[in-house]
Length: 235
Image 1 (cartoon, helix red, strand yellow):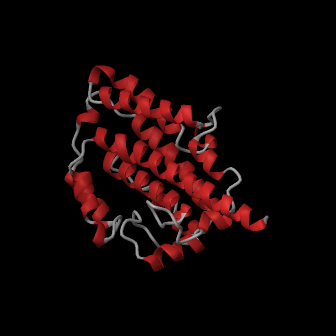
Image 2 (tube, helix red, strand yellow; image 1 turned 45 degrees about the vertical axis):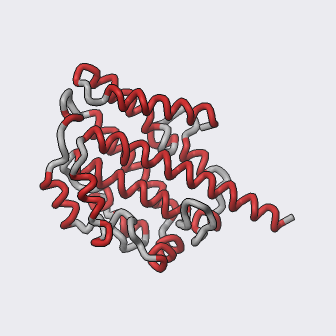
């Protein structure tokens, strides 16, 4: 995605925001969501003919850059791999539990074993030692495969919604289910409260789209900065 495509993504997100609560525009909103969401995952997730934001991130991305922690940036010190894992976890738990009242992909597919990590939460409020551990040990191929499965599940979940569903508030029982699953750390309990005040539309407009867009853009900036510095060192 080049700059003009990112600007168009932002414009389409505004359009989605304006129509998503109108039952009469339900299918149009779903179609626009699917279009927006497709551009936030790898092109293999949805067989997209257009290069996506994730494609741009992973293209020529060095493993050293992917795992590097801490990073020097004005808005984050977390590794790129943490950002990718974090957005995937957030999408998984919000779409599959809070929207669909089903199992997280992480648990259904026993992805933790494949990822080689023990963390089952969202990544919010992790300690520096925990982020360093995740950044150095998580399996990259499995992480990218996990993202594909989460993305495909999300598309199925949203495609099954019917007019009026976007207006529904998140059910308290589903928030409790995430709490029982230790989906967020105790220090990040504010996140459950935040989600509990949302409608399904609110989850679609942030965790499943805008949240991913922001973190991928941040990760691309980190990649460009770090690899440019690396090239300078080599020369």
